[in-house]
Length: 191
Image (cartoon, rainbow, N blue to C red):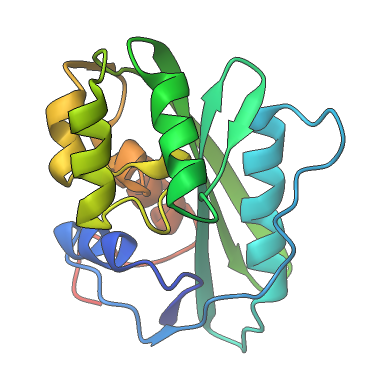
């Protein structure tokens, strides 16, 4: 049995390592991640995780793990910013407010798919112009949903969360362990 990670995210690889799991292969899928008109953030995130899993070609004995993380401000989906200007808009919109970080996971083996999503409430402190510009200068916002990463310098902007810290990073560890076990991955015994 082999585990395939359908993601190029180094954070997801690190979080899997916390479970003692090292994928046999990494196959990031190439799918269109454009939200559908009027699609709600949680529905969007679940759909993308499932489509990623479906897009990864897997052979017999392979388990595919895919995930998607999005930041939601009300009904607004804040994906990965295209540039520093969009990242700044995201940060100013989140400044001083609560938002939700949604991470959906899909685990596939054969034609069976197990799915789960985790919603974490996050509060960002009110940001000054110096803080926003200083953070943008680090480049840490690149490739991050909502334009920030809680595990990097932006962690200083987050005084409170309610939910899963690892889900905000991109992979909810407890839920991932549960889905991998359900799919037959020997998580707590020699793989």
